[in-house]
Image (cartoon, rainbow, N blue to C red; front, side):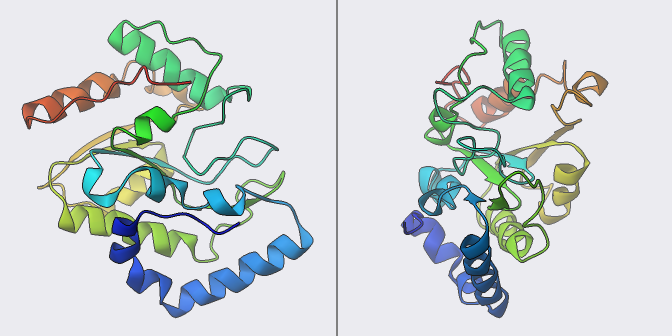
Length: 225
């Protein structure tokens, strides 16, 4: 299945697709899929770039790599398809939204497509993974590609909100112009670290306050299926 990507991103990232490292990355992925099951499915690898066009991005949430168990990965960081058990980090994200906004989003659904459609770029640093092996496709070129996407957003856009959770995501702030954009940082929502400051960070109301101050439509964070 051919990957889908919005034309706006295809134009912005064309130099990356044509770079030597990307040719090597493709060769690596072809070899991996001949031997192993990999996630997400081919058509969803660039789902984050397909669901949220470049000029529609308002908020960026960064993850590390896709879920590595069957049925989970859908190309949007932290998101799982309808009917799939909600992973612990996403459970904690929903809990923080409910606490922050006074909402009652159930913990039974984890499809964040509704966020992507409103301008939330749900971007993993690594876009593929070998089944059952977290981090197995790191350091093969994906990070160069997604770092370039972050730099392009920083340079070409203005007034974006970046939600960086955990040390890995926070390190990506080096690619973001802090004079043009708003960066919110917190510990990762994982059960191992959420109680160190993710709970109570109020990033969802703060992001909306920043968007509203710029005359932009806030995000409806309750749009989870």
